Image (cartoon, rainbow, N blue to C red; front, side):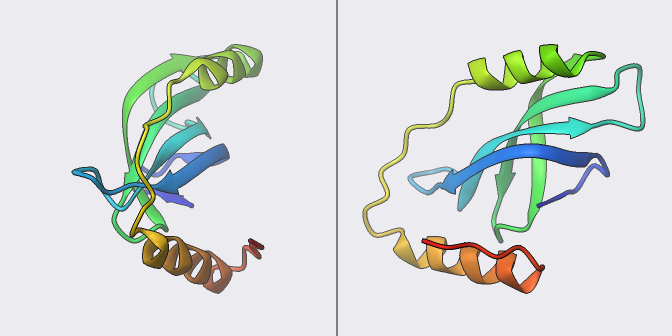
Length: 103
């Protein structure tokens, strides 16, 4: 996962999007080297499954607070029917980046 805002992702969950959303959606805890806080918890969106834009942030200085915000961040509900091609593309893209995924 590469965040387009330059922050460093620490923990994330991504799912196949669609139905009016970008192809991949999820949530991320990131280390922020800019601004007034150490950590941010964002909703993440991507068309290619590798480069993610982030919105709807929760900003904190304590990792435990970030984890709490992450655990309480509501995920998107999306039907996966007909979206298997994006899941396959995501696995391929991440494997190409050196992240080995299994089904």
